Length: 221
Length: 221
Image (tube, rainbow over all chains, first blue to last red; front, side):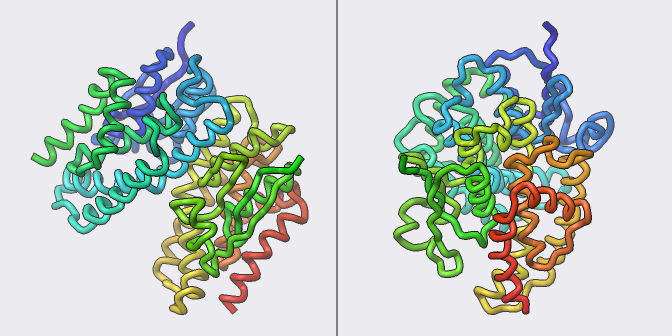
């Protein structure tokens, strides 16, 4: 069978890493097409005709196009993860996965992106000095996010829903890695959480995160 | 059977209206406990001990607590909607529902809340004049959101996934009604969409939206 599942990704991007890591971990046959953000390939043809939002990741499965990463993670895990580990089917467990995926948009993601963009991406793209006030504000918000993530979403559990990671943990890890690559100091419980996700995923976790770490190191050096 | 499904809501809030309308429409037995935002009841005991985020809605079902409205809508529709209309089970249809629910956090919701807060809520709570610059920026973003909602999410269909509304349409309608109540002029296709959602839901739609309309009219008059 030829796979029709295609991911349009650049591993500099957090949700792109989450999608690639899910597909590689559950070993679903898929293609990864690279759309280089730094070169602006997401803004131009042929990629731009796929999506009015001109953002990656985009997931294509046959005739189905999904332009939002959390929706795509849910879809892929639900359809292709035969272990049912990554998006568990019991409604009360699934609700906790969804709860984190909804919460993180305006929390982990918003402030991780805010920190990284002002610290690394804008200085690289615009050749301007980093916006120290914005960086400080996002860093402070990240401290709050880390506390709420640790106390409410993890609680006493190794992962959000218990002993095994789900797509919510994968999204959390990939998002937390971004400000970490930019120099934000994550709290010890969040660092330990990242270690647990990494130990489940294996070497692919480091391979993909090294893309953003190397880029950030180059800009910040 | 005594229902254990409880919604903590105030119908001034968009996601609270979406939750109440879903439960009333699918006729699941539930309790609605009112937490008055204007009186700050969400910030105080007894409600505040339920959630570290001190936000409504909160949904409780037995021992399960859900603090995010889209996660709660998915859970309730999946578990209690015997018609399977509101959160359809086929993965490719469900992906389109999820796609809108993910997108709207930083689009429809972000700018609808931004518009309403600066136009109505802050002037009421802080007794300050409305922030015209912020209102104008959110209004402009809402124009873009309306165009993308109409062209991409609806396309030629009456509702996001076809001929019947899902929780994605319900969330969209409840969010668009908020800036509308505050005086933002929605585009004709979005107004027609609201009419379609209203005609499916019936009189409860007007009853719940009149709560925010009356409040906004009082503040703006």
